[in-house]
Every structure is written in C-alpha cells, then in structure tokens.
Amino acid sequence: MCLAIPARITSIDVAADTAKVALGPVCKEISLALIEDAAVGDYVLVHVGYALNKISEEEAQRTLELIAEMGLLEEELELEPESEPTSATAGTGDQR
Amino acid sequence: MKYIDEFRDKGLARRLAETIAAEAHPGRDYRLMEFCGGHTHAIFRYGVQHLMPPNLRFIHGPGCPVCVLPMARIDHAIALATQHAVTLCTYGDLMRVPASERKSLLKAKADGADIRMIYSTQDVLRIARDNPDRQVVFFAIGFETTTPPTAVAVKTARAEGLTNFSVFCNHVLTPSALQTILSTAGPDGVQLDGILGPSHVSTLIGSRPYRFVAEQFGVPVVIAGFEPLDVMQSALMLVRQLNEGRCEVENQYTRAVSEEGNRKAQDLIEEVFRIRPEFEWRGLGFLPNSALALADAYADLDAEQRFPVEIAPAKEIKGCECPAILRGVKTPTECKLFGNPCTPDNPMGSCMVSSEGACAAYWSYGRFRATSTQPPALMLD
Figure 1 (cartoon, rainbow over the protein chains, first blue to last red):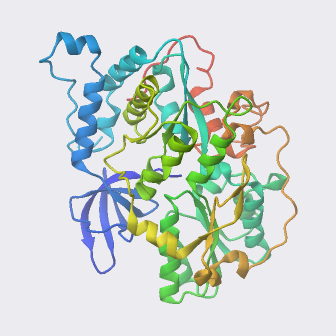
Figure 2: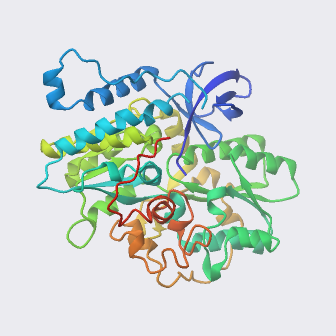
Figure 3: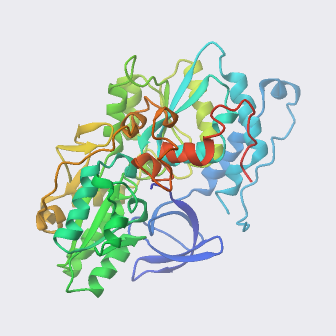
C-alpha cells in the first residue's frame, strides 16, 4: 500500500501543478501538489498518482558506496587496503 | 531502472550477507521487526531471510493498512454503497478484503452496487465532476504515505465547490501502532531487539517521530528503504547497534528521508484532518489517538456524517489468526486455515489479501522453504 516508485520528471505543467514522469517505458501524469521546486530531470517517488518527495542523487550514491564498503570483511580490509570495493555505479537509467 | 536495479545487485547482497554472518554474535538472538508490509514483501520476494544467519530473524509487523482495517469498516463501506446508493471509489487493495458473511466490495459490486477501483484521488474528483447527479464517496485508507493525497482531494473539492464528493476516512498513524506493539512486547507478547522503520511513511513524517522507540522503550530503529540491499544494510546497522550497546534512530534511506520529512504534506494533513480519540485496528484493538477523521472545517465532506448507516456487529472468521499474526506473536503457518482453505485466491483473512500481508508473502514465496534445509537461490534476477 505504501509502495512508491522512483520516476524521472520529463515535463512540467506549472498551471496545473502536474508533471509527466517516465517509469521505465511507461509515461504517466502525476500531481506535484505535495512537493516544491520540482524540475525536469529530477527523480521523485511516485505513490497513488502523486510525487511524495524528491530522491537525492548524492545520497543514493553515498548509500551504494557504504553498502560496498560494508560488504568488505575485516580481514579483506586488512589484506587489501588498496582494493576497490565491488563496483556499484549508480544506474544510468537503463531500461530492463 | 535507476534507483531500483543498483539496489538489487546480487554480488553486493552476497557480500553484505557474509558481513552480517561474520558480525552477528552466535550467542545471542537478533529479533528485528519490519513494521511495514512493503518490507515483508521484499524480505520474502528476494529471499532475504535465507541470507541471514539463523539467529537473526525478521518478525512481521502490522504495517499493512489493508490487514489492520477491521471488518466493521468494510461492512460500513458496503452499507454506504448499498443503503445510500452512492458511487464508492477505492484503491484496488481493498476490493477483495473479507467482510462479514463472506462478503467483500468485489461481491457487492457483482451484486449491483456502484463500486469503482481508482488509482489516484484525482480519479475520484474526476468521477465526481463527470457525475454531478451522483454522490461520490472516497473510501480512504492508508498510513501517512497515503494520507496527503486524500488531503489534496478534500481541499480541491472544497475549492471547486464539489458538493457530491465526500470521504469515508480510515487513515491511521504509524507511531501509535509502534507504541502499542512495544508496550505489549515482552515475555507474554512479541520479543523484539530492533525495528526496521518504514520507508515511504518516513519520507512524509521524517525520522524524528521514532525517537520515542529508542528513548522510551530502549529499542534501536533503522529507517530502511524497500529494496533488498536497503533491507540488508539496515539489518547490519541494527546488528552493529545491538553489538555496540547503542540505541539510536538511524536512517539508512537517506536518499528520500530527512529528519523533518515533507513539511508541505504535513501542513496539509494538519489542516484537513483531526486525530480521532480512538480507532479500532484489527489485531491490536481500539488504540487511542491512532487514526484521522476530517477536521471540523471539512466536516461537511465527511461521508460518515453525511450518510448514516446501520450495520450489524462484524462477524470474524472462526479460526483466523490474522490478529495474532499482526502483533508478531504467531506466524502464518501456525494458523489452521493457512493454505486450506485460506489462500490468495480464496482469502479468509486480511493478511492473505494484500501482497504485503504476512500470510500472502508466506504463501507466495516462502511456504515450501519454511522447513527446507536447502537454502534457496538468491532471487534478484
């Protein structure tokens, strides 16, 4: 019920306070009534036809880096101080 | 898709699992309640439980709005549609939830009531505009995630002077349910060591409202995203808090959750709703200050006041263990009805209806693995 999906804003209708978003191959119109300062290119969480919040690119990247770091066991950290963590590049918007 | 695929990376999941297994102390239990049905669904769908060491167990909480809605409210909604001949609009999740006498909204619709499934509250407004001669009632349910869209619809209806729109309000509040679960935890209730906090509820209310869990009950909280890597990272964060004797509210889902949450949405909720003195939750009973009704300024849009109904006391299904499952004190397989006759195709209880319900998750993803000694493959493809 509380599921919300990350989607990219492709266009904005300022007068109607709505946006068109791309959800993979699907294009949908949503309401922007719950957020401020939305811009084309922003990623938002979409829930029952509304943008709930913007998603922070920087924070997503930081979380992925932290996950990669957490996946390194203590002994690996000791043995391989120079090793790169498992690649976890941020998505490029690739379609599945 | 961006923000989804990278949080389902198999290699990272395996490595995280190894770290959790290495850091979990074999001499103690880690009983982590995932409050939210979205987490329950993710844990089962991606086989996350099977990646955890045997002494780390996820306990399923009551965070599924469809599951905690008492039968009497479905009975009430059906009565609105049949006794007042209104057009009743609601989200698809509610259509098959069992009401008294084995009825449901879907069966009432088949019997001729005008009940419509909508995707957004904007759809309800559209139906009201297009049918000025019909009274249109929105059957509103959900936690704080789903409440602001109802508030927007109420304010829009008022601004447009839509006199044929009203709301049957069943919105409920997360902190109150958490308070109840934690108040009854202990030897006779559920045993909890940590809480995985809701993802999308927290985008609205922020991380601050969970402080009481750590401060008053001494239980650590990690607000967790819904993807499998989010759940696993959050489990590791809880393991580390417990190992280090810390008890804090931490936020794993920083890409969408801030400390203060979405102020614009919070202001809307405050304006349009008031807190009910008490409200019934399936499995938890009548909880004080746990749900919302329309504020006095919008009382003329309250369907309960506009359309009084007469309903008989609700009749629960005999043998259904949904209430105990919602409190985390029983698992779905401990219910005599589980699997026969209660399945997602023939749900007897609410936890089997929604894909976020613990019973539906067990049936769809975990039924045959509950006793299996073979660990299943990681399901991230």
